[in-house]
Amino acid sequence: MSLTNKLWDTITDDNGVPLALTPPEDNRGQVSTVIMVVTIGIVAVIGILIYSQVNGSLPAPQNSDLNNSSKQVTSGFGSAMNLVPVVLIVLVASLVIAVVQRFGGGG
Image (cartoon, rainbow, N blue to C red; front, side, top):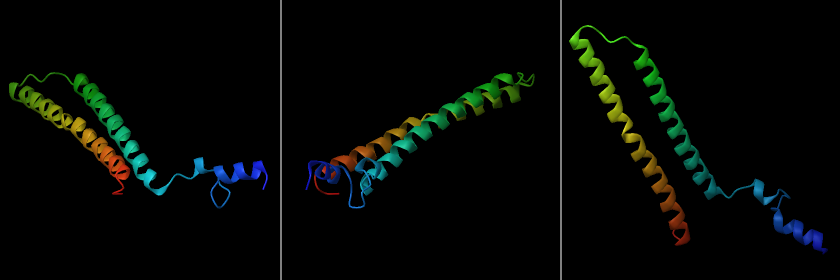
C-alpha cells in the first residue's frame, strides 16, 4: 500500500468521505446545544430591542392608571428577561456535564 493510500485511509471513513465532513453522533448534540444557546441569546436581544422601540414610540398616557400599567408591563417584561441568562447558563452547564461525562467513560 502506498503512502498516499495510507494517508487517504487515515483521513476518510469507510465510504471515502473525509472525516471532517462526518462528525460523530455524540458531537451533533453539542453542536445543537451551542446553536440553541446562540439562537436564544439573539432572540432575547432582538426582543428587547423591539420592545424598547415600541415602548419608546408610544406617547405617555395622561391617565395615571394607564401610565402605571405601562410601567408595570415594562417591569414584568424586565423580570421575564432576567430569566434568559439563567436558561443560557443551564444549557451551557448541560453541555459541560455531557463533555465531562464522556471523559469519564460514562457516556
